Length: 206
Image (cartoon, rainbow, N blue to C red; front, side, top):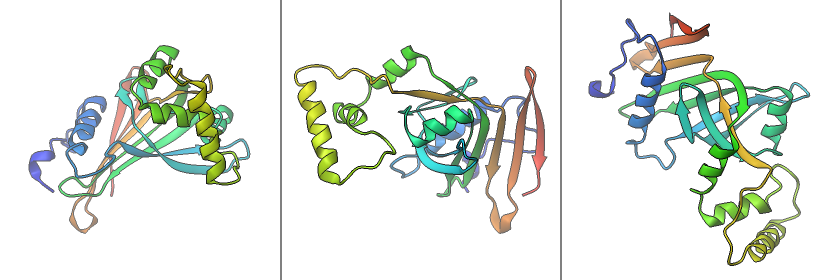
């Protein structure tokens, strides 16, 4: 790992993890990755079954980590039943070799936030969000294309509004772990656990 990227002091960590996480996200953007903001989202459904999938981080501050999706999808139904989630970021590429784990309660972003992000999406992605009954069975690719064509025809010559079933989720920062990989599994780990208006901080064995 390039020492110039390792500005986090695991022996004397900062009192708050938010700035450190934001810095790591910015450094990850410099990696040769198509989606350095990809993260594994884990949920538990109403039946107690855990599931994971990859989504993209679209916002981060002291309120939490934000992603957007169909609110009728499998993950959305799981979050409706158990509104808590875990996020995992993993950058294994040199010179970083890091992970961030975030766990916390999940809430909707505001309509204004969802609308603002919707407007940044390519029109083709907006059409797909309307056309896809995400996580539901579909006969074949041709059926999916037919649904997309129908939505395109519906909004021809018009802007595509945000579907009522599509919007953002925010995972609160209740537990945040920063992990720095080192040789021979001598990794550095520190965990922040929310305690009132502050944080309990512990260094962990690798």
